[in-house]
Image (cartoon, rainbow, N blue to C red):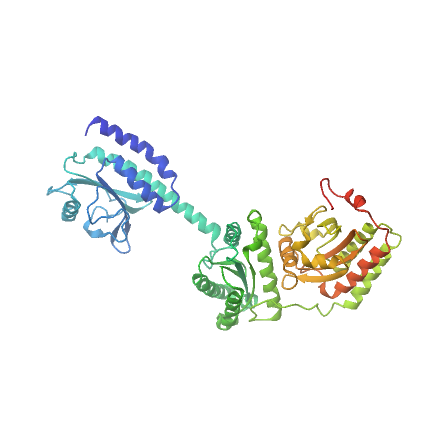
Length: 536
């Protein structure tokens, strides 16, 4: 071969390393690699094939160059018996490259090589094993037409250099895939893990808005797993978890874009995209009902939540995703409290030891005592909301103002230490909310109250609860004068006293706090807020 062609081989080899290193999948690697290999070994045609040891086959993944009529660049089923290529079917230590030409009776590849060359219309060929680790992964095959020089030992050396770079890229991609599995798969069940769920939700919420494409999460909790572990050991518990995973996986496989995941312990999740609420409810109920035959007497409690994409902000994807997950978590928690086989959340009742009358009397006593001597209406409302948060062990509380029918602006807030939870957001003074988006709040401002939780109530308020990390809220409003209206909100979570029973009480206390206080002007309130906040 001429010096110029040898120089072309060296330049092609120099380009190979960086090009292969940029590939992120085996498919991409073979597509890019076969073209590079053709240049490195100066071939009329080249192919990369994968050895299927368990089936005894050599499967061609990619062809390029001057192909015969029967050859395809990306063949669906071009295979050869591995036994016909003895130098490839040997161990990694014994595999070696070879070259030969048409009509050569001493060809190391035997008759199969001669027949293939003739069928391809080629005169000379080269075969380079691709060895990854301790196993022959596949083969680089290349050939030339009759008017080009026959392959020689220098061509073999160039091909081996390419094969070594190609094998290193295969190993890198396989290791990255294994790391990905370790990072995103649950080792016991093979489902996705919590990281996979978070990533899937973030990706879905980051998509272009599509009002037809809703997102739903079904959360499933295994009933009785602790008892099973105590009586049958963790092998028994693992058996149950794997069986639940099988059922979650079967559902996920029936719906496009779905994902099954184990969140840890006894909790599983199923992400469903584009389904109607009725269908999601049916799936959740079916999982619960079908759990009667789980091993060792286990059961399954399922709750679900859905979020149509019409109000999703793609720039706030993770917070929106977290809110939906909290809605589903609340549903699952309520289902668990109601007992095995419940497929949807139901409203809970205050625990028996809670005496609602005593708590109402206590918050009234604390609030009125602390209000004594306080004149400023804002200070009175701040005192009231603080008293409510203390008595109810609320997760947060706030006082907001609306001036001249304008947006609701948070003036003051009370945040429980539990707000250190990264899933919960503290609503800071100066935060502004359009009343058109929160009709329940608008209605309350004229003098009224409402309750909302993750299951029931105004949809906007439910979404606010979910994205800010609360389970429920009570709110009461009162109009100070023609210009100013106030809104007091008290938020609760699983550690708080159930709030619904105290909605009317809060309404009465807010009216008392405003009526008996000295009216505050919008200008006085604005002076207490961060710079740039507009009340009107």
